[in-house]
Length: 352
View (cartoon, rainbow, N blue to C red):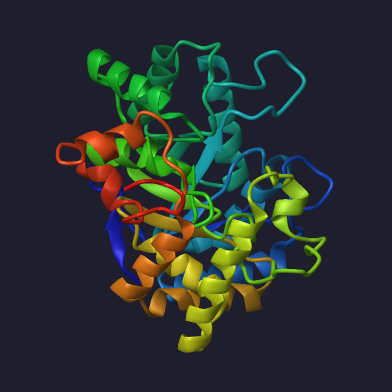
């Protein structure tokens, strides 16, 4: 499996990473699966065998149980892989059991290290933006953890473009460690990040770790026109916004399915292949409820879409341009090439 640089850092990550949000038990905080230890060990072993070197988790996944299971599943293989985890979400009833204050970051890091059974975290990520804490305080806390040897690199997740740029500028001004990555929600169905976060990542050398490249399962092939939505899907469990254009979703799935049928692969593999070839993407986070699903996702790393197939998906999945980007495309495309290159040549209903 290809190993790609994580942004401008010296860290290499596998083009597919494994996300352990399904490790743990239902009914607990941020739980969307019930993978126990025995199955977690089998999944981790298969991932390592396939060349995956990055495993992603978070303290809030199953209220810490995901981290515990990942640590136990890795055991002696810990040095073969990179562990990424996150801090922000509420982990207790006290005032400082949430957010990105120094108080919470330091305590949360110690707790994650203990649950993971390791002496360091390879990539520690701010799980969201904290508008109540000065970004300099957050970055200084991360920097101190790096200097103490408890964290190797830092990244962010679920940040807006101005929020990430503010953090990068503050790090540069204060001589603090920069975020080397951003973990973002990105798929052929949800391409909003292409207007701010993707160009920002390319410009600033911030690697992109893509989560939900199947749009919470909407591009898995299980959602089809005139068929009921599967009750156990991640999109249903997490209740992501579903008030968007369903006709556009089904038109896109039809195209993915046609390409999949022609290649003899699954719809999910086509969607994953589109995402892995997007500009600036360092790694795709794949997940699996079982080993069958894992094998299908891993198979997506063994082939690539043709330029013609990529262009066809680009056209079908294009979204309307928000201001000021539609203006830059229409009036200033010669001086702003990023946006046009990441979108279809002529999105439906939009003047090129």
